[in-house]
Image 1 (cartoon, rainbow, N blue to C red):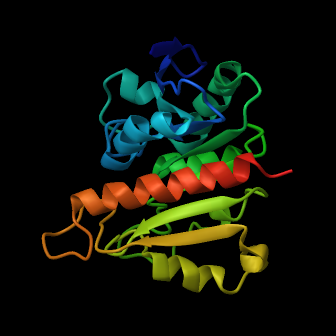
Image 2: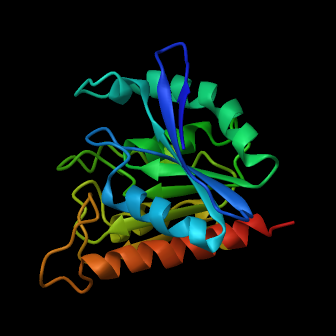
Length: 223
């Protein structure tokens, strides 16, 4: 199901993969360099509905307009927040997990409180620009007060799972496992793996599906 959603920064679009008997809704945003057909977003939309999770992929207005360069963070946040009421209508009171890949994950983290998210899913969180570890974006990852799951490729030039754990180590956020970091062995920022990687393409897709499904199930049953 496709839904066009007007916002003050232009029309966005929701692509909805409905579960027959959903227990939760997962709302995902795309990155700055691609759209909703990215490997990780596509596999979750294809597989999670069969497990009881309706998946809503959000196409930002700049992408719907056919532009090649992503809008500024404030504009991304505006479009996301103005779309939230429509997503809550789709959820019909079910737990809403927000998230996305790369820039989409940053948006979800920055706006988690305002969207009444039950939890946040970060796929390939861009901890820092490639080659500039001093420009950390950890503060954004620390913003949500709800559980956060991060799936991070072992070859991600924007920061690996080990890089994330190292930076998180000095913060109270690790207490109670509120932020959980899962390594995707051998995967790059786009969740692509080399032929000799510990996990092939199929293995990466399976890991994404099982880990996210378990996370959504867990946060949806929290009191």
